[in-house]
Image (tube, rainbow, N blue to C red; front, side, top):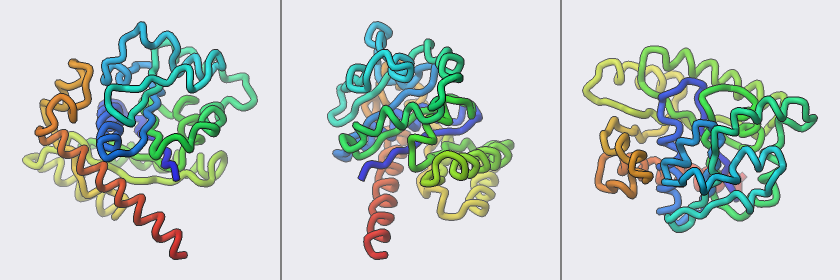
Length: 263
């Protein structure tokens, strides 16, 4: 069964795109069929795979406004099993152009429905806001993965996001749930990091992944080379962190399916 994960946090700079790119790569390395959808007008996930601008003539924007189909915009990456739907700055106009459509909040879901069975995981990288693009992603998904940087305002922003997820669950998508929170840019030497991590784990319990993604220069360098960190330097602690996260997600999904069969 396909797992559709929205990577979301209305706060910028917490590692959403880095998590989307490297988690998608790690899942593909585990021989899963993965689709990454870049729903951010900044298109950082697209550049993170070295997708040039001329390769993005058709992109998420064209797909959402009906100028092309998903199969026409999909690009197979150099990583076996991993495909991407790239984005561009044009996506900034989508929220304005789609606002008067009756189905404006479910366009992505309707587009994805015929293709879902082609993939084991669909990962949607969202912009740092709770606008129409993120709403479309959450209505198309069954779970939300939240990257969280261990800093002072982390819990305040997390509470707002969890409230938004519950609101969308009530009004638009009853199957939507919080899949988990992953702590990013984690520095074990920082007392603040440790304090915030402790508070988040007390607040959310087993919804917080055991895996912590460490602050690592290789993770920061990789996008400038148009590569995920697992390709840029698989031996780095950042790459190993995302491999561990992928294993934990696969195990969590396997356990969930086993529980459903048992019930």
